[in-house]
Image 1 (spheres, one colour):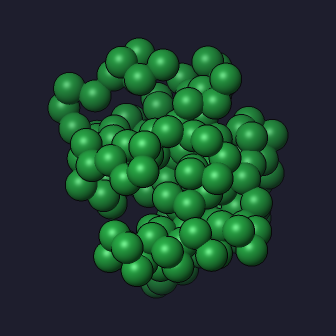
Image 2: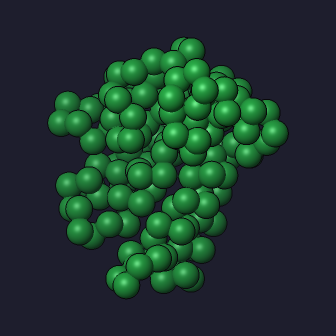
Length: 148
């Protein structure tokens, strides 16, 4: 039973040696979500992850390492595709809720696929939009068990 969509920042922090606390939290959340079959990903998050960890003067991962990580995520979680319906709903999310377009795509993916929680640090913790709740998994008292 899929319960939560994992945002890109969770995937990136799992490989960020510069953020040891967030890295440990992201790794634990990813592992627990996989083991309990409660997490899912969007194609958008996988694309953003690959870009984020391979760019810059000091990339977090080599291209080969990032490719391996994407392949592992593809095996570990259900993946939601970017569809025309997601794009249209995202545009509505921008219009109606003032979300950035890429945040709105994540929200739309959850909405269309009936996943009622998005784990992300990029939204207001606890905000609910059309039944989709945004939860920051990097707050001190976060426990996955509360959400599954």
